[in-house]
Structure formats: structure tokens, C-alpha cells
Image (cartoon, rainbow, N blue to C red; front, side, top):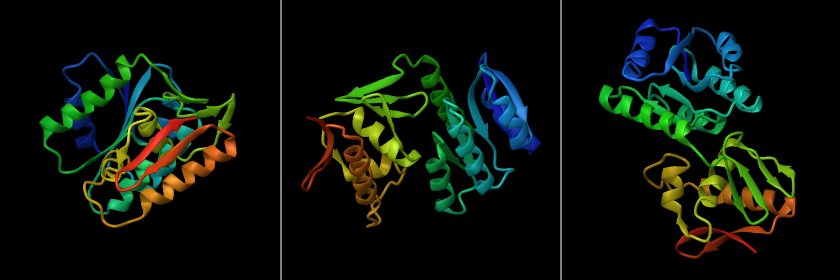
Amino acid sequence: MSILIVDADPLGVALWRQSFSATDYRITVAASFVDAQRLARSASVGALMIGISVPEESATDFILALRADGFPCPVVARWDGAHHADALQLFDAGADEVIQLPQHDVFFTARLHAIVQRARVAVNTSLRVGDLVIDLISHQVECGGEPIRMTARLYRLLEFLARRPGTTVRRSTLLAEVWRLQYDSGSNVVDVHIAQLRKRLLESGSGVKVRTVRGEGYTLVAS
């Protein structure tokens, strides 16, 4: 399996290479998103790493284009930590992980290995809850064989709930796991996305519902 690195900075490429030096992964490097787009279509690419030598906005567009093309593999982006909105945009575009710099080498390496290894050993490629089928590789959701249009964030929210059907998930847990926020700033971001998810499910004709457990959180149930 090949690890595709998109980074125009030699020092950044060296750090990525060092992180995988003790593995059997083959490293492929692209200095631009144009080259990376072509290389990502290779069946041997198992994970994609994006450095900080490219603007976050361009990285966001690149990830969106990859996911639109059906790129199923993990995408990890490095982030300089200057603006939280940049990291959220990368997650919304479809990044699986955004690693803030500076990052201690040991933890940086451990997190990369964990992400790639989970993808490598994954057995189940779909989740089924009621009449919903969630493809964990393509991030597509279907009801009765018909696709349900999802943004990257709505998909992450649905998948997280679908992995715990019938279980009440707290708002703080959703903020931490879906939005990667460790505190509740008082934003209504969870409520807004829950409402959007309910609307998509209702429009699809699905019997799956997102119920509010007052004072506790949300639970996904199949009627």
C-alpha cells in the first residue's frame, strides 16, 4: 500500500517519511494538488497526507474534489493552528484527521499509524440501521436503494450515531468526536446539523429517526 504525501516543503516531506520509516508502506510524493489528483486515482494509494506548504483553502477544495470523485481512503492534513475555522473547513471537506503544529514527533507518528492501520484492517465496509445503508468507504448513504445527499459534516454525524443505534449520545460527545471541539462554546451548531439530518431522512422516506432525549442528548432509532 502507498502513502501519498502532498507537500512542497522538503522538511515537511522528511517529517512524513520519518513517521512511516519503520513500516512497509511505500511513499509517493506530490509537490502540487494537480499531481496529487492524478496519483490519488491509483488503486494502490491507501492514505493521503497533506502538508502545510499549501493554503488551507486550496487543501479544502482539493479534498472536496477527491471525495466527490469517490476517493475512499483516509485523508490527514497538517494545520498551523492559526485559525480554528481553517481546521473545521478541512473536516467539513472530508478530512479524517487534522493535526495541529507544533506536534511532538512521537504522538504525531502514533496518530498517523493508528489512522492508516484502522483503514488497512477494516473489515466491515457498511453500516445498516433500519432502511439506511451507510457505505463507510465511499461515504454514501442510501435508503431503499436511493442515495441521500449528505455534506461531509452531516455524514460524520450520521455515521457516529449509526455506530451506536438506540444509544443516547450526549451533545458534548458529538462536539468532541464530530466537531473535534473539547468544550461547549454555546453555539447551536449541533442543533442545526441535527435538524438538517432529520430533514434529509424525512425527505428520503426513511423510517430512521433522530430522537431528542431531553437533558441527555440524541439517539438514532429505526421504527
